[in-house]
Amino acid sequence: MDDLARLAALHGVATAYQPAEDVTVEVPRDTVRTVLGVLGVPVDDPGGADAAGRERAGRLLPPTVVQWRGEALPQALAALPPGTRLRVAPEGGAPGRDWDAALPLGVHRLTAEAPDGRAAGATLIVAPERAPAAPERAHGLLVQLYSLLSERSWGMGDLGDLAELARWAARTHGAGFVQVNPLHAAVPGTPTDPSPYRPASRRFPDPVHLRIEDVPEYAHCPERAALDELAERGGQLRREVLEKGALIDRDAVWDLKRAALELLYAVPRSAVRQAAYEEFRAGQGEPLERHAAWCAAVAEAGKAGAGPAASADFHAWLVWLTDEQLTAAQRGAREAGMAVGIVHDLAVGVHPEGSDAVTGPFHARHISVGAPPDAFNARGQDWG
Image (cartoon, rainbow, N blue to C red; front, side, top):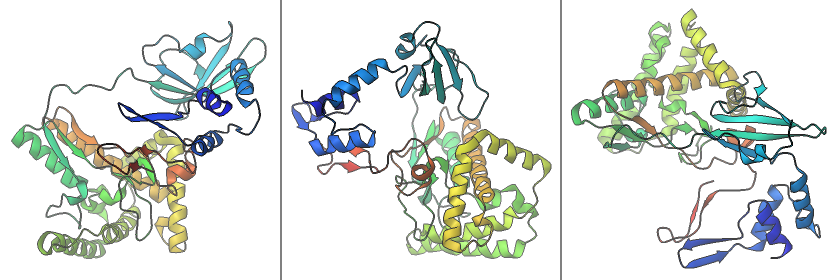
């Protein structure tokens, strides 16, 4: 095994893979070198593998520690010198605490201080032993939400349509779930990237799926004439799709909904609504603040800073509204008798210029994830 292969093995980088049981493909050396470089591993240093091995042996903590729920102590922590103090800064900004086996699920920050004065930090991932099982065997529907138009849709399916479909499927057909395409936030701009598998963010939803009339402030908006005009134009888009075979125009739908949401944003919220918004925003913490600020910056660059769209608070509010309607759809599905309810697909990758890639801490620039060629796709797949 040469030095490059040893370096790759030390850092968990595969140098070969098997696309079929009897086929082994060697990874090009340039690819291995590039991946190691992105990980910050020097690949041109003679004896680098020996140095990396010595560095790893002397390291107090690895970069990432995984604790499976129910596991008493991860191996990396069990090997620490006696008397080492472990502190955890929980995800979401909760107060720091000493490490214990009852930490909440999530991605936290772990620090270690050894009696000899050495200190180190690591990402701590607390994961469940297994995904939760469905209560029972169930059948359900798979739907692309944008294609689920009703007589109330503004040119494409929305979360109100999803809630109605779920209740109908449960009560009429005994369905246990409705699975939908990814509803992640898309990259702003016209035209936007329409693929749900190249989102701006996998963490936050796209407000284009909102049902405008279900936003509570809609009933108190003084700009009713303007809202009615926007709703009529949304109805025209719907009729063109349902009656004339037109393609769904996501950008046109969002232009209308954004205009309506800007009017609703100006409506004073009740004390209860404002408190709920502030609680949601605080609970989402820094990730929502970064995403909202990024959305505002993109909107400002595209609209010369005009209107609420250039405000980070506006985009945080949109995330809250969308989360509310997603929650209402799930609640309605379960109340109608669904054992599982709404199943949300999750994109594997993100858009290279999106919110997650630009502001998130867990993305490697210039690296994409995918699948090699196989019996189902001779060209392989690139998921971003």
